Amino acid sequence: MRAVIPYKKTKAKSRLSSVLTLKEREEFVESMLKDVVNTLSDAQIKNIDVLTTTSNSIPDNLDVKVITSEHGLNEAINSYLKNIQEPVLIIMADLPLVKSNHITDIINTKKDVVIVPGKGGGTNILYLKKPEKFTVKYYGSSFLTHCNIAKKNLNAVEIYDSFLASTDIDEPHDLVEILLHGQGLSRKYIEKKFEIDDSRGRLKLKC
Amino acid sequence: MRAVIPYKKTKAKSRLSSVLTLKEREEFVESMLKDVVNTLSDAQIKNIDVLTTTSNSIPDNLDVKVITSEHGLNEAINSYLKNIQEPVLIIMADLPLVKSNHITDIINTKKDVVIVPGKGGGTNILYLKKPEKFTVKYYGSSFLTHCNIAKKNLNAVEIYDSFLASTDIDEPHDLVEILLHGQGLSRKYIEKKFEIDDSRGRLKLKC
Image (cartoon, rainbow over all chains, first blue to last red; front, side, top):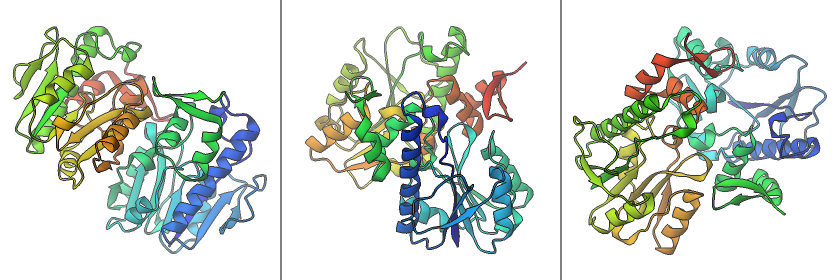
């Protein structure tokens, strides 16, 4: 089996721009990517692909294969899937709370497809035992869309229930979850800049 | 063992006031309470207490014991715990996505304490094998507070990882999760008024 991480660094995570500068956001998404790669490695996944565009630099010291595509997310992933004849785990790069035990649970499923929903109807992780039969459609209510695609394909689906794996980092309030539940490089990065206002459970900038 | 549900109906859930009227919010919190009670019953929990103030009416047809206290949340729960000599599950009333298998998992823990975090550092469910030794402190970063209280008490703690159990319903965007992942009366109530804008994965009012 293999894993693929769609990755965008350039001008990434604009919804965090109220609390992080462009440079900081680009450093932070790189930290999250490294955390996701480390988690996959800890789960003994040997073949990790990063799917990105030529404008995004990938850190040299990551043990991944870089695949570039100038297409949008869905077209890029669907082209990728057409060439894969083994089970594949599609995992987003903004999931620094995912742990190796989640990955192990997911890839040991008895079902054909595993979907980890994101907040608000997104898809954080999609595990496909037979990727050549599946067409992804991210954005919007992709969780429901992927459930429906699996149903049409007569795939048995597991919805994987994990707060940590369902927490994708998009908004400033999501950074609180990293300080509360995170580990690794993303936590180190956010800890340098923020702390939790203990009286209200909210994030505040360090003075 | 027993379960206790702190409950407020009167003027509840003010953060939903942009999408639900006062009357609707009070009807909706009652639906959520019924869902939580049904989930506990499905998990074979026989003794369910609802902890509330005299100003809050509880539906007649619920098989629960109503305990009233005019104190604030923490004082009311801590007074309650002092009189309990058996394991107790403290579960919030705004968790319509919790299922009976979550409850069964939690009460079958090998640890002394189980904490289910809420979004933003809250505590959604707290299971205490020896409640007489524990003092709760909700509000603010109660998840961290309860972890620290357990540590001081030398309690072994399990952090229970579930997206469904960690999703407390406070804000309009939380209602999307009910439409996506919910069952029961809360879903029926929200379905009457809202639907998902499939193109953007957001909630929209039904015309």
